Length: 544
Ligand code: NAP
Image (cartoon, rainbow, N blue to C red; front, top):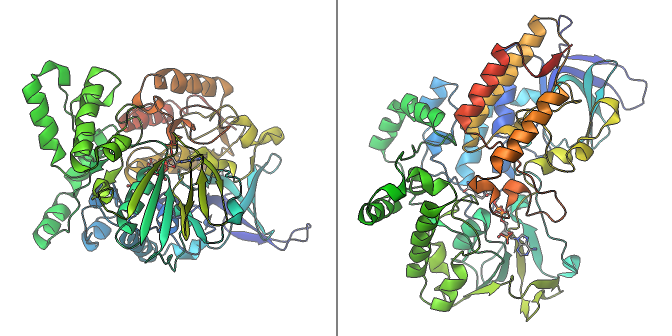
């Protein structure tokens, strides 16, 4: 790209004011957007990020519901690109809460002077590829437009919130809100009758926190989840020093594990050791913080089969031990999906909430929600009067945020139509007929920051390769994409993530095609694949 588009302003004929031109346009300023901006700028590209929020943070900007916090260790989630940043920033808790994470991302934005290239309060309503000029034109809600040779969608996996289409939803006279759009000023819940729909990772965190202040809480649960104790704690000065000295080791471990977490799996099979040894390990790991009890367990706990079911029963019994009323306990025990087939919610006192006199658990699989009424929620069996309804009903994950951008590629093909039967990508990050589009939000899995840094580095190297070799555009071949989609579907068919009705396969959204939305590969395998593709002259891509 010899005619590298440095930021310029050209007059338009369309009457929408001036069009700004950049080498790269980034959509989103969350963890991946901020790093994309930093990296592309460092590589000498002119760049502009657009975000519909009024500040940085993405997921950590929007999801400010009570109880929102990490399930990965704070120090494994932070950026690794700057030693100075690593040494300056003190994580307060092992699993940081949303306010601290938002503060961290603001600190990063300030430290690296990222804000000057971010346009806030700017919702992208369309992104269209211009074949003649070889650029992407994005249009904002206010009608203004910008052009970028490259388009990087850093819109996160969980940016499109999902609210079920309940009848009468607008008739409710009280306050209602979705966890994803929690108001900055908070919601007054003290002394109120509150209903929560949804018991995924979000619902579990929220319910635990608000049960401390509401007058009465009614939880509408469709599917019980396996949840495990987070065992969070403050980081004392000595531990802080140790963490700062151990960053190379922390990141080394993260780079080698399947999901980029700092928990190495046990290579033994649960079925190859005695029952006594197996139980000893289960119990020991149960006392450990975070995902260790999940990811550092016997390797076959993480695949469908006997070991998985053995551990699932162990977890079910842990739930039963904590809930006083045996009928309520059984309602909270998951029996219809495998352990780990949904992301494991980590909790801090969730099950004890159901021992409170002012908390009621309603099974809406047995008696579904029929409608929202002016006074509350009506299930098949009963109407529950409420002052506040909280929708912890999840997201149109990964592809929802992309589809909402109204992306149109070559020959007028819309990404929405192309993805109608599931994502059609090459390596999760590119799609045939959509040149120079990098869907980084669709390709990060596991511990997002760890995965995203290497992914964005690859995007930067690819863009530099094009620039240095006078190529204008890159897009995968249809053959490479077909082979990738086949790989995702075939190799994904037997992994845990495709065994439940969850967002992993789009099954939480009525009408969404069932397909694995992430790669079935481990993070190291994905990195190796990308490196190999680049080393082979961008095998599977057309460069023009
Ligand atoms: P989710 O896992 O999709 O859970 C949504 C909940 O809403 C489920 O319990 C679902 O029930 C329920 N629901 C949806 N439609 C319903 C309906 N019509 N009637 C009744 N219930 C309904 O969403 P999420 O909890 O927001 O979590 C999404 C992902 O975000 C997580 O898996 C995780 O990766 C991430 N997350 C991470 C953290 C963290 O600790 N860092 C915290 C929150 C979220 P069914 O299960 O029956 O569909």
